[in-house]
Each structure stands twice: as C-alpha cells, then as structure tokens.
Image (cartoon, rainbow, N blue to C red):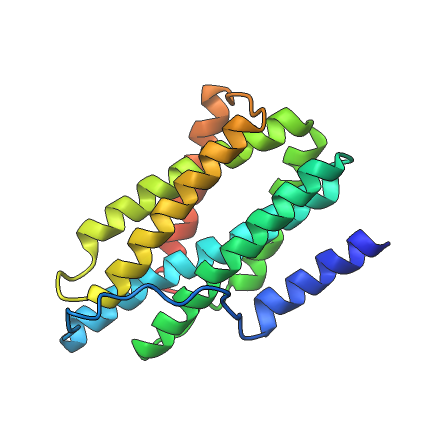
Length: 205
C-alpha cells in the first residue's frame, strides 16, 4: 500500500505541481543568451520534448521501483527518479523563460511510460535494468542531437541539455554495473520508434 501511495504521489507531483530541483540549474554565466523570436520558438520546441522525456523518466523509474521485489534495486530506482527531478525542474524553468509551456499531452506520456515501466519490471530485475540502459543511451543520443539543433546563442538551454546528457549516460552505466542484460535488437528498435513518435508530437503539442 505504501508503494502504491508513493507512486500516486509521484504522478500527481510530476503532472500538477511545480518541480523543485535539489541542484542549481546549470548555467554559462560568462555567455549571454540573445535569441530572436524564431530562435525562441525553435528552442522551446526542443526543450518541450526534453521536458516530456523527464516526465516519462519519472513514470518509468516509479513503475520499475513499484514492480521489483528487490529492496536494494527499489532504492536504486527511487534515487535515480529523484535525480531526474532536477532535470524535470530545469526544463520546466527553461520553458517558462522561453515564454512557452509543457506538452498538453503529459498525462498521456506519463501513463504510457508507467505502463512500460511496469512491463519491464515484471520481466525481472536484469531485464528491467536493461530497459534502463537502453532508454538512457537513447536519451543520451537524443540530447546530443539537440546540442546541434539548439540555437548557437542559446547558452542557457545548451548548458541544461549538456548536463542532462552527462547524467543520463551515468544512469546507464550504473544500471549496467547493477546487472543489466542487453535487450534484443527488435526491442531496441521498437523503443526507438516509440520515442520518435513521442518527440515529433511533443515538439508541437
């Protein structure tokens, strides 16, 4: 019952509360961000996608923590979820600064990611960790692409994305060390296809 209540609390806080970061938002204080209206719109679309990714991260880790009977692994997922809250807060702050908003479909993204997290958890701890590894590696590659797509003068967004990429790849390494198995190629391809749909839609809605 406590686990279910915690999962419900995380969902409500992720979707309806203002996220609070435990770490200061990354900045490049010696570089001023100056953006045209067109650049702001482009940056906002990219950061909206990144914010959706963090909404999904909250759902995935919460569901995986709920699914595992392993107390140590549950603590691992819970800690990773807490660290992802920083990313959620940073991207939300950046969207506000750009005069934009999060995706209107965040409840849908959260529900879908939560279901995937439960499914991964039911396949066993090694497979669940393997899902984390593949997810975080794909997110890392996605964030790397955003560093080339963001306006060159949007130093604030670029600092956030760069730190997020470092953290996501660290999460992948930690999951590997914890005993992850390598997922089958078809599963990885399906995950990439689902991510493509999400990022395309979230950039606009």
